[in-house]
Image (tube, rainbow, N blue to C red; front, side, top):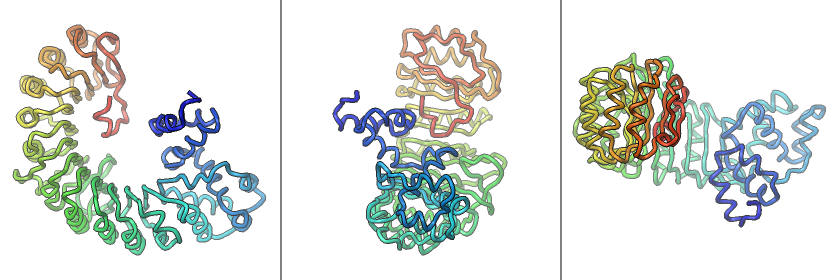
Length: 482
């Protein structure tokens, strides 16, 4: 493999870009491999930072400084200073495509606290100039709260930021001058992630949104304190929104209604923004806190139409709202993930009916299993013939045998992926699986995941192609993964 064509090796390493263990172990194979792998690892050096690797990263960054700067900035009688003058094999910073200003701020603080004989403003200028100059170009930019350094005025900033396609920004007390300056440079943003606080949000972020020529992916994450709102993915305590800011923000996003295809929001929309997103393909709508009755006035209107929607992920508790979202999609939904535990038989039944009556192309479904609605669930299996993945929340083991029997009897031939989340924490006995597994023989071998306290005694290699436990710290992004 070490003699493969360089272009082929590059494609292989690109596929392994998230597998740092393999990439690191391959660095020492030969010079060619090293020259191909180092730029991939340094594309986003902040991605896999640990307490140990942070110090190594700091050392490498400081080593890029000029000798004069090192002598002027750092105390000379410490272990760090001894390694600063070692010759670097690469200009590592030139490979960076992700600029994480939160991580850089921490690095600057760490240097000032432990090694420096200069004040922090001098260190900040030196370090930021290493990243922002005519020799670097970034595609992803991460701006933390309270950031006020005028990076848009650094020589070379226009070259660095003119090709930004992803922007993550905490809107709390970020310098308005910075946002206005970036708005004049960053006009190719396609993916926007905003962390919104309860107060002190900088309205100048609207200028950055307006400057974007083709906004495709939007994620709005809320935190802080103020009027009713729990945020995703944080699962504790209450969080609130600054409603006036949300209204102005959503109105600005509506000016991009024809280009936005992916929308993730963890609050009830403050406007009718969803009605305007006519080309929306993926909607994630989460409101984790169950103790507050959140109002979805803008979603209760049955006239909302999302004709292009293919993926819906939500935990909203209003059955009528969820039903409206499902019904008004022109039958294009292929993946539905419902994380609200509808314990009511009627609510659960209404959702199942809405799905099999309006989603003929459904490929994946996640919902709670209630034994009283097993006949409606069987209708869904019969009508949704494209279904290949089912993820069940199972509140208790009552009726589990009937569920397994129904799955073997009525599942479409396309269905072979199963996840069973046993919320009751009761142990699934071998007998419960026996009929299910035996009757599955002759069909497509299944991919199976169950809760960690489930039973594995009957794992048949002919029937079960791959088995795994559901992770206790799973994330919503894993719903569709096996």
